[in-house]
Length: 135
Image (cartoon, rainbow, N blue to C red):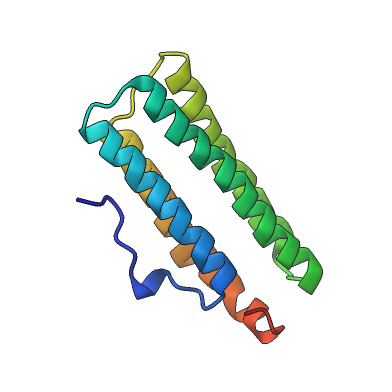
């Protein structure tokens, strides 16, 4: 069973961003599945690493659009990205160092981190970008 089910509520109406969000959902679901199946730490670290790397790439995509189109809340949203990305990096580093495991608590954090960010912060910028012709 997937930890995160993609629903229409998560769509922003910007295919590039929606597609990237779906990749993030898939990576979190892959990590959750690996946890449930008690997969090898190396496999879980690889998935976690993909999540970290894709998160950075995704945030860079959004931030480039903010800059290109003059999104007024660019700084605040970018700061939120930095905070969220650092939390995910810290979790992976703690996992790789053997200081923590991928637990239900970690998975709930990742689920809530992504869905709340999309449903709140990302839904705030979507109308602005769409009004600027971003599709």
